[in-house]
Length: 107
Image: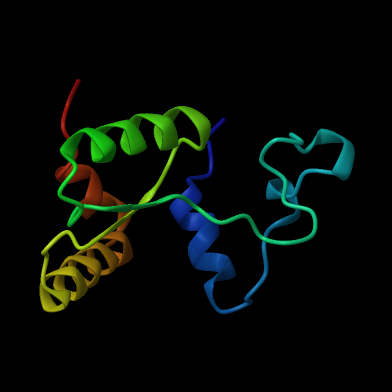
């Protein structure tokens, strides 16, 4: 039995602007810690321009432990570089599956 790839499912849904039913968990199956009810939580923002390197390090550790993610501000990466990175990523994921697999790293 062949497994349907997530990319194939996403392409089918791209123009439909919907989420396939198979990907939607019922309320009782949703993990409470990751399900947002009410106000959207504020993701931790870490300012790399802060002169206190110890504070930055502690902030990264705390955000990683408490949230599992964080946003970085004042990282010095120009906006055009970020835009180009996003464009390249988008183009890669729009490639046919065979082309993406040719780029895959074997384990």
